[in-house]
Image 1 (cartoon, one colour):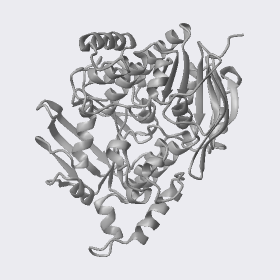
Image 2 (cartoon, one colour):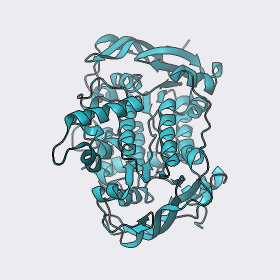
Image 3 (cartoon, one colour):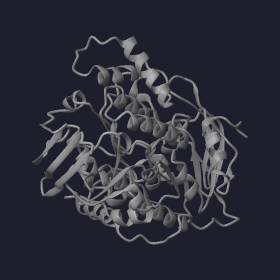
Image 4 (cartoon, helix red, strand yellow):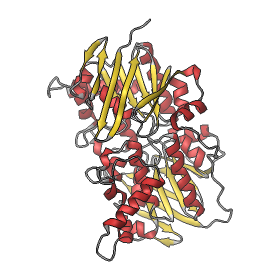
Length: 506
C-alpha cells in the first residue's frame, strides 16, 4: 500500500475560548484528491493553515514522508513542496502580477530574480491551465477578484508542488475555467501530487475527489470514499437536515413596475478605457436580475457605479423613476440602494475593528441607530446581536475583532448589514462566495424576503449555478457590453458561450 506523503496526528488549536481544531488525525496520499467539507467555522481553513505553516498547532505533530516536521512559516512549507491557493488572497497589492509570481517562485533565493524568466514561466503555466493572467505589469491591487484568484492558482502551482491545498479555488471561475482547472488537477494527480480540496460545491466533490472528510466544530466527524456517499448524504453530514425548499423563488408580478433602471450607461476605468459601454437594463419590483460573466468584463465597474464609488460618463441611473444625480455611497444608500461587495476583506469590513463596529459600519444605518449627533452603543450592540442571531453567525464576542471570524461568517455579516437597511434595490456581487450550503440558503432566503417586500435584486455573480438557480432574468456582461436579457429557462450552454465571448452579443 502507498505510504502517505503527509500525516497529521492529534492536531489541536485554540483561539482564546474557541477550539478551532481538536484531535485531528489525517493522512494525505500521493496521487489522490481529498475533499474537505464542513460548515463555515468548522475548522477547514484553520487546518489548511496549520499544514501550510501559517498557524502553529498547540498540540499534535505533522509528518512529511514519515519524518516529523514543524513549519515556522509558509516559506518553510513551500520549500518542503506544499502549495496553497487561499480563499482570501495572499497577494501584495502594490506589486505587479509578475512581481507577485516572482516572490512565490523565487521564495528565499533572494531578490535578484530574473523577472523575464519568471514571467515567461508563469505565462506558460497559465496557458497550460487555460487561465488568462492579463498584463503581468499591472498592479495586483487594481485587478478584479477573478483575476487575482487566477494569479493565486498559478502561483501555487509554480513551484515543485507535492501537496497542493485549494481553499475554495473555483468560487470566481467560470464553468469552462473550472473544467480546465480540474483537467490540470487530473494531470497533477497522475503525476503523484497529493491534493487537498476545500469546497462547498458538492458537485465538484463528486467530480474530482477520491476521498472525503467532513469537519464539524473543529473535529473530523466522517470519512468516506467518493463511491460510498451521495450528494444528499454529504449535505446531511455537513449541516444536518436540510429542508426541501425550492431553489427558485416565486415569479415577480407580470405588471411589476421598474425599481432600478440603467439607460445607455458608459463608465471608464482608471486607464480611461471603456469598462461599460451603452449598458441598459431594468430590474422590477420582486425580481432578481442576474448578471453573469467572467470577472474582469465590467462587473467591478458596474458594482462601483451602483455603490456610488464611480460616476457614469454617459447615460442615467434611476430608482423608482427618479434619476440619481449624486454618486456617493451615502447618497446611494439614502436613495434606497444597498450593496454586498465582491471582496469582503477589501471592501466589506475593516479588519482592525470589532464585529459590533463592522455590523453597523454604514452611514445610513448609524444615523438610524443614533440620537441626533450622539451614537448609541446600546442600540449598536442590539442591532449587531440581531444580525448575528438572524444569520447564525458564529462569533466569540461582539467586541472581538472581525478578523477573528471565518471567511464565511464574515461574509454573512456583510450580507446582514446590507439587508438591515431594508433596501429598495439590493446589489449583490458574488454574495455566497465561500458560504456553506446552509449559509448560502439563508442568504438567498433573506433575498427572497426582501423581494416579498417589493425590493429588486441585481445579482452579479461568476457562479453560473447561482445565477440559473435564483435569477428570474439573466444577461451576460462581456467586455463592458451587456447581452439581451433572457429568462432563466434559457440553456446554460448559451450563457456559458456568451460568458466566453464565443457568441455574438445580441
